[in-house]
Image 1 (spheres, rainbow, N blue to C red):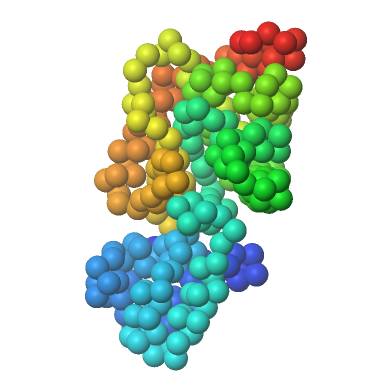
Image 2 (image 1 turned 30 degrees about the vertical axis):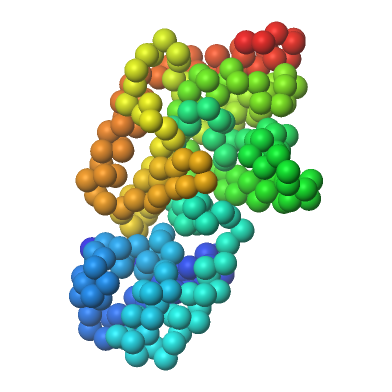
Length: 279
């Protein structure tokens, strides 16, 4: 079972709930399995709540207050923590991403969000929301760039991105926007801050043709995977499913160009955009 370290509540909105849940559970003499059983969730899931990698939902908070005699503490604070600047389908994944030690991602048609520039992200959000106000679009861009600041740390998290060649070739926003976006990816790779591989068209059929995949690893909690589609996403912790998704990512790594070859391709395509040639 998960035994989380003490978390700093000021650095993670869910850290306070996680720490208090662990202390209240241990004070009541309950195991993680025993606390989770009435909710039909595993002890590992309770451990993820305590580690701050999963969001506490209101139904769970009610149960914890009743069983642990915490006088409504979890219910009150759960409502505050539930507020998010991210879309509902992505909020929990974004919060988990912020405390992950490693993120492994396959992106099909887009440069991954953590690697996007502001101009590239703005074009994406405008395509998603053609009637939104400029202020609304700018807010979404700011949130995305703020999320990417987790790469400001020189070592953590490890980010390993496999990008389909289609993401390089699709001229989002035109040549100037794409050249800047790809140069940004190349700079991060050359600084050894991220590992980037390109899955080329000539790789043919591959293990993740059905779409986007993200895996997240944590210091004190089991790994998670996240799959998404248009305006929908699902954060998964079932061990068999996460293991299957990890195998998919390993197969993609084997089929992709090496990091060195990938960097050369990214920079070559960026140069084509800079000179006005459609790659």
